[in-house]
Length: 369
Image (cartoon, rainbow, N blue to C red; front, side, top):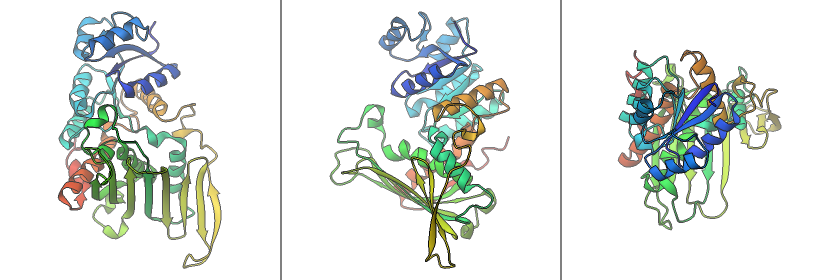
């Protein structure tokens, strides 16, 4: 029996399993259809009871031609380079869509996805950059965007994240040339924008494979970038600077560290509870008091008052957006997500030509309807 909103998952691989779990937790969604190009996998989904017999198809077009029921939402969890085509096919059938990150594999494909969203304002879109909807990142956003931030006006940040994936690259990631930039770093670029409320305007990046690694795609990146509000895109003195190190081939213990520096203090994101602060007590910042920050509503991400994080928040936003017939778009809708996606494309361009890249050039004219 179908619930309020019917879902089809397109591409029933590893990424799809986390979405399946979130659908099962949400009372207003039901997984009713699977689309995949693997006939044996489709047979398994029917025989195992994941979906009802006859609800597995090899394409969205087949589903729409052969089923008398239409899904409300498609979750596209296929390889990155397929997203732009599948999104257009899905939206042309009048189906709301969530696509996994990275948004696309080229800037032109990403622009086509935004074009599809503009052509269908009655439909909702979202990209699966769910890290922004973890409690700790919601706390960081509230801290940085409060009217009188305790560390003063944000000036620069230093972010580091490293882990050891071992010698083998697993699954579909084996085929990504810039594996860290195209996958994990997508989350960091989106979080920079989400936490600060600014856009990344300039990127200088170096990617590489450590000398001891046998990988065939870059596992490691050093990224210097700058953020600004739209009015300050061309005012370099007002930019907020970021130094970012990301790694999936680091030996020894992994770690994460996210630091923020302002004129009146500094902060560090604590994964377990909130922000650790050092508030300067003199003009030079040579004396300081330690403090902390955690808001009263830290558990109510984006004020939605639901018991979800991550992908669950994206689903809840999608539910509300579908009910509004597209008027209330999820936070990671294609227009917003494109600006995060563009940073990864700019970083790849920079790593290959050795120059800084001005990121807003990628969305020039894109949002003019």
